[in-house]
Image (cartoon, rainbow, N blue to C red):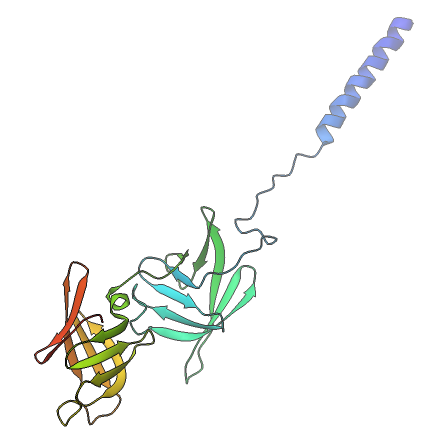
Length: 215
């Protein structure tokens, strides 16, 4: 009798263990988000995918460049705002109704990235790439005139001896290949073209009538 009771008790224990094992829920697999909603981050001002470059200004405006030269005219301008921790909203300036663009904020290989218009993702830049225009900013001087080139692409040209053939003027400047072009604000003054010469670290701006160098 004692043996029968012991066998019955053992079968109940073993059966209970089996039942318990069968009903125990499987562990839940937690896959962390690439961009953690609780993570604090600050959006950089400059972004690029190697072909295009995006500038996010602190005042809420943006500029999208079609290449890596920030001095070239942007292909799009507008206003931007952050809708959530993972979404930016770009609203292009337009006289016609234009649909705003949704930009995804994510992380790729641990780096913050922006994804827009099915383009390759953009990653942050500490600063835009250095280009020829950067080397031309500032003051230039020669025997015939002085020239100041400003970062906003405006300039101030002042001849040493003003006359009918040499007038002072202001306007906008741009670089085309190896030529600096001054476009005066007034139509009464013709545009001026300087050939950009470079020898080692020395740069000159020259026309048939003058040569300008760093003062």
